[in-house]
Amino acid sequence: MFKITSQPIEEMDLKGPRADPKAGGFVTFRGRVRDTSGGRRVVSMEYETYSDLAEKEGERILAEAREKFGILEAHCRHRSGRLSPGETAVWVEVAAAHRKEVFETCQYIIAELKYRLPIWKKEYYEDGDSGWVQSESGAASAQ
Amino acid sequence: MFKITSQPIEEMDLKGPRADPKAGGFVTFRGRVRDTSGGRRVVSMEYETYSDLAEKEGERILAEAREKFGILEAHCRHRSGRLSPGETAVWVEVAAAHRKEVFETCQYIIAELKYRLPIWKKEYYEDGDSGWVQSESGAASAQ
Amino acid sequence: MSAAKEIELQYFALLREQRGVSHERRTTAAANPRDLYDELRSEFKFSLPPENIRVAVNGDFTDFDHSLKDGDVVVFLPPVAGG
Amino acid sequence: MSAAKEIELQYFALLREQRGVSHERRTTAAANPRDLYDELRSEFKFSLPPENIRVAVNGDFTDFDHSLKDGDVVVFLPPVAGG
Image (cartoon, rainbow over all chains, first blue to last red; front, side):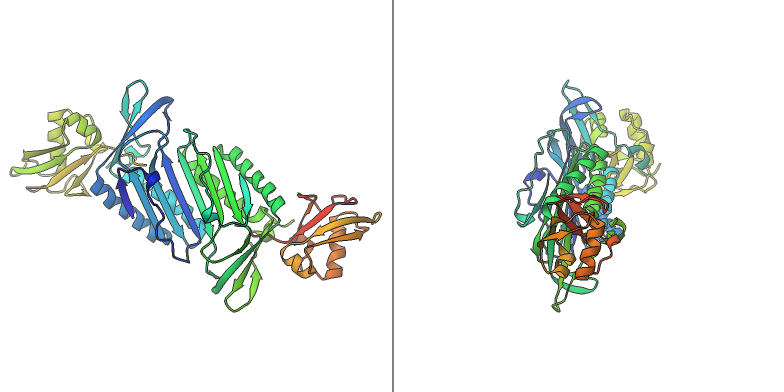
């Protein structure tokens, strides 16, 4: 399941349905807001989301990942709103029968969501300045 | 920190020291006992450990990983004793400034501990039979 | 150019800031998103060229040659940066 | 062969099963783990050839040519399978 949420991911109950005894490997990734960016001190990060489309595209990424890597489960949460350094911005969990696939799948999901989801982030710096973050694959992904 | 434990990993408080605001990515891996092996139904798995040496070698693997990949933190717990299918046998967590390193490091740690730690596992099957598990890299790692 | 139609526009991130609103209704003769973006870009001085923009119509991604019709909800998406 | 010494042996996994004990003290004239493993293997019919075995002395890995001395704790390690 893919969800955009304005609530802290830290406080969510993220234990998904894990009863499947075929699942031998689980990997969980959490990406947090960092306190520096390009040498500048970051005081907060604003995540702006086109939530309906982001959730639709997010579910497509998870479905593709399940099919491509033959894994059992994949879930993701992505924050919206203003976050402080140290807060979790994105959370991904993958379960599979074997261990190799969970890492490949989790990395695939993170790479895809970075350039496919309609999500934008603006950094606010200590000096009062701010700026939209340009994804490294932003140019390549634009049509 | 690396620890061999006879207590269920599920019930441990595994929140390590994560105050470091430089940590932008965390990855957690959990490996569970599966209920089948080579087409046979597994009822339990016995982990036999040479614990003193396993913890010493485990700490070496974590220190090598920190140095090799420049990550901030790496931790691991490995079970000893008799486990049922679905129970967590091994848990690894890695924190780093950026995301790429956490996956590489976590996979490196798992690959190393499989053939370097003095840990043996014996599968017990539904039909009463049992057998020592031969690691896929067991032969290559022996001297 | 084609017949005038009323469409709904939503703006996000840099385009929202440059337009100054999140939503608006607009009557346009633009036949497709390409013409519509050109029209908006010259009127509101958007800094992003169309090759850096993706478009969604009625809640899903589409291309710049998609035919617009009355009542469509159109969103131009600046370069994204999720995660 | 060298002077007789008393060493302590610990066994794990398949070697523990084939020896039938986890620990024992043994007086041996074996100069190094290679000779000691050969001695034990022929006495207790261990199935594993030495090339599938690693050795630890006094709590750390070492090689089969390490010189044994009185009081050493020796562990022969069958192929491992952690994780």
